[in-house]
Image (tube, rainbow, N blue to C red):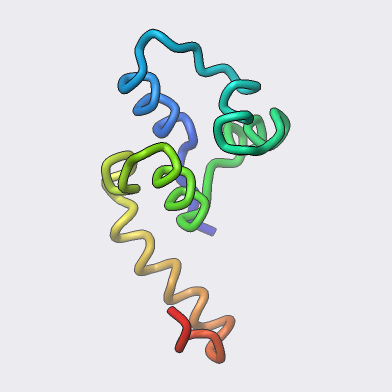
Length: 91
């Protein structure tokens, strides 16, 4: 599966809010998840849908954080469509 580095989003957030500290517990509160989930994102990265949701929650378009996201989302949709053709009408 396609993965995008979570650290890229953290760096964008830190540039936008330079006076705040964005450690894992703080990011967990901000995104409404546990510290363990944030650490998992750091280790494993984000799939394109997670990247979209988190970037948007932080006030960015995913392409502002990951320029390659726009190309990757097309590939991810193709993979999804091959596994779930019955759901493609919903996308």
